[in-house]
Length: 368
Image: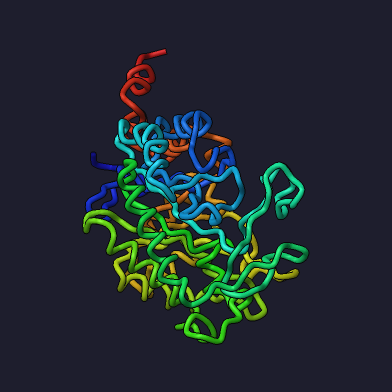
């Protein structure tokens, strides 16, 4: 179709073509039972499978039981979880929308309460008992939190393989690809950040050491999947001022991930709040777009921009100006599941209803 706004042009990674550049960002629902998604997840994703998005990424999903953020988080650590995810992926597949699973190990930020219960570490006396967490170093994720056990070098290969097995299960469940979660203070980000990684062995110290596990995970996941299946990586590109992870570090990581066969960097930030720190960029509309732009320019990797992208004009400009290849929205999609349709109308799409399912388009074309 000619005359499409850039936001509504197709985009291809390996064997997957996205009908447009709008992605539903992963949003934890904290409603799973022993890692299994349920009716809530089907209802949640049903809203977006009919919304006109070009891609969906489901919530952070644990590669191990102890890798969940909370007891209510989804999992993919066993073959039993594969069947539980199929109703979710079927929703998107029926509408021709690629759907990805974000695979995660929460590291030292695991074993927490659900946000509405306070979000702090689980209480040993609660109905949902805490579990031992692990991290690059025995450094609590926040003041007053549990102290994680420092991971032994002998365990690193097992972590990478668990990410790879999770990716294979995701594919069996009907997902079109996976996103490795390397952001927001979880395990892989905590290895990258000098605030949380105090190791003096091959997995710490220098940037090469700190990025070693993320790169090994990227390599293992790529090797576990067919060549036509895309692998995404979500990165916290910066920690903040005062000696944390820098954008230069993340550009170097992206370059190494590109060598492993990772296809796109989902450029986010933050997540390791060791005390009060000043953000490098003040939060505002599109405040993290510059991360995606820099990684794309310096490495040639495709990128996805995220961070208060709430208005269609901004999202379209990001794509039109070549600052990222895709954009992702989270809370705005909660507020407004029909956001893609509004965007198509505001941006002058020649046939806005065409982005919607056939049934919706039929009724919307009937004159009032």
